[in-house]
Image 1: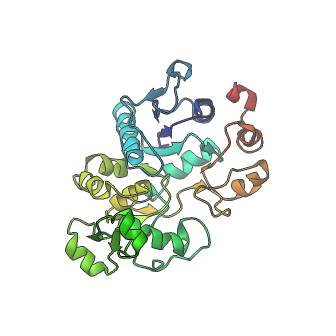
Image 2 (image 1 turned 30 degrees about the horizontal axis):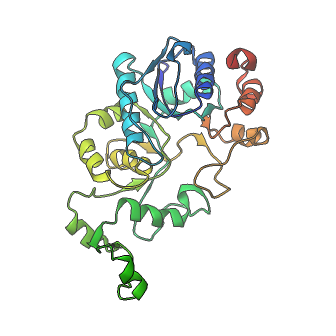
Image 3 (image 1 turned 180 degrees about the vertical axis):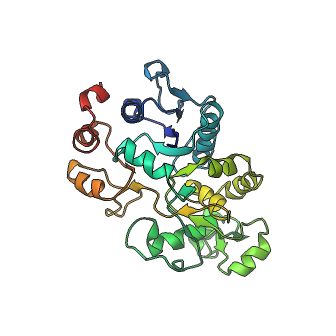
Length: 316
């Protein structure tokens, strides 16, 4: 039996690009269940122009880059999607994503999958690339990101230095200017912060999971405790779901999240994808790719050359 796929879309700007993504999904999957969490405080959006199979989350979370409200918005979208559609698979997308493989191929792969989750992940260890992981010079596999992630998600402030007056700083009488001293020894850290998860994971935020895995995120009592642990930390979206899912021994998780991204520019975001990238995208086996510019030019090219969709009818 073929799997029923539902889509959770997170957006905060470019409503026309979001609409174009949804029209593409409808053309491919025959009006699948779609829930959109849009940050209406950042950008207005006319719900009336969207297809009838799309539902919007109300009230919405105020989102921001790396803020804990981003995964919380995804949870709210998952909850509404499960409530009204009960799909077998949940696919989390941003407004700048686009499908790059046929609906038949995606549906067949998920229907016959031995995995519960497709999630880019690795364990966050102290100053170490996890065993079995190949170090990369880009993206979430680079050693510098592992060190950064440890400070973000594992380390705790041991001392709080009072902020000295400007006069003391200028006089040189107060040389200590750092407010935090991060604890490096993991065993001492666990002793100080007993609510820390036994193992912490991180990676790319965008993923897809079956109903069993989503039920864990929505219903397991350990998840609200994790949310409290991550409050106040930076870039929570790159670790919260990973830690929640990867600590469940009964979930089978594939490290390939079926997303094509190009981090070769070594920036805070993947580079904008161009038409020249399409052959590499098509050969990657990915289901979706990101990030695409709002003008839709590359998406039109993908419609015509990869997906077999008439670009004008989708973009109209």
